[in-house]
Figure 1 (tube, rainbow, N blue to C red):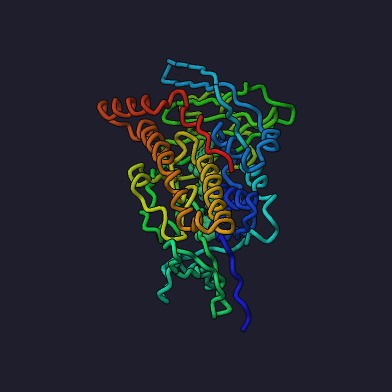
Figure 2 (tube, helix red, strand yellow):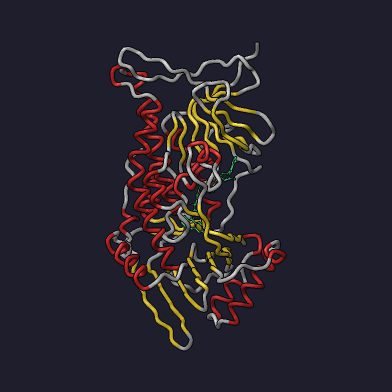
Length: 429
Ligand SMILES: Cc1cc2nc3c(=O)[nH]c(=O)nc-3n(C[C@H](O)[C@H](O)[C@H](O)COP(=O)(O)OP(=O)(O)OC[C@H]3O[C@@H](n4cnc5c(N)ncnc54)[C@H](O)[C@@H]3O)c2cc1C
């Protein structure tokens, strides 16, 4: 009988978090297989702001230096609020590292050192379920009908540890894995398998894109945040020639407009003119590269109480990135939190592997290593989710004065103004 292929670690989803996890594991000498539904690396979404905590994680992954070459430092937050004839402005220096990366650069930097063949493209996981055969693990069913199965066997040794063993499953067509990590974003089949609720959504259209200035732009190295007539607009410089912008619109474009991003841009431009948005911003949007345009119609988030109480582990199955803690864009930390997850998870799994081979008495099995990862990440993610949730409530939900007061108090306690969350260090890989 032909032998089934056995994988140690399978990662579902090759976005920022899935690739970072595969790279982190690779740096620790642990092979993995990434299953990505797209036919090639996905890098939509134009730019992504990365704060100091994200850069620390990228340093551990060994890609920070090359990425710093692609994006300049953002030195100032520039908040502008235009209400009728009145415009208020505030400039605050950015005290910790903040750069806006082209997502494509980030994805490519994470992917390039992952060994060839370790990312399987065009592979969509359709379902994850408990093994109907009564095993102790999960079965992945792909959209093409093929399956992959955890082959785990429970055994107690004299220290009563539970050990997992990969062994050759007698059905040759089914591939095997030992550990399953769901990094497939907000609609995660792995998260469902763990018993997590679906993520919540807030309908809110955001158009994002890049504008290229062949002869250089004249903008300061700032994160401009402009509120005007129900719009929330952001502009971040990436290089002397490249600018990232986002336009959060007060109402959804119609279904036929949404199908064509150039029409969405025209629609946004018309509405921006109607609310007397500064011409400088209108020109950035008008001059954007059509290929770079990206539209998100809703924000996804997992409420903070679910992050505190949710089950992030079932045996050797866990989640990371948005699959674990989708938090919307309100504090710009979703991507960086996913990078932190990758470092912590690989570190925990590597400890288990090292102990396994070196010293039986100190052995930590995979399930324990994942438990360690979940325990380390939960408090950090709970605070980030809370901060993002409260910020979102202030920005998009028009809260009552009392709720507003509570929100402001929570943000003060969390050190939101000084970006305490960005000063986090997830530690060494
Ligand atoms: C408007 C907006 C602005 C944001 N700005 C920032 C910011 O400035 N800074 C920041 O840090 N974060 C930001 N975020 C959040 C950030 O984009 C996400 O947190 C981050 O992309 C999550 O990465 P991920 O790898 O967990 O998931 P994803 O990026 O969603 O990647 C999931 C991957 O899994 C694949 N996949 C999905 N389903 C399957 C399946 N069934 N089988 C196989 N593959 C599958 C997808 O194709 C994709 O490649 C923003 C989000 C939004 C919406």
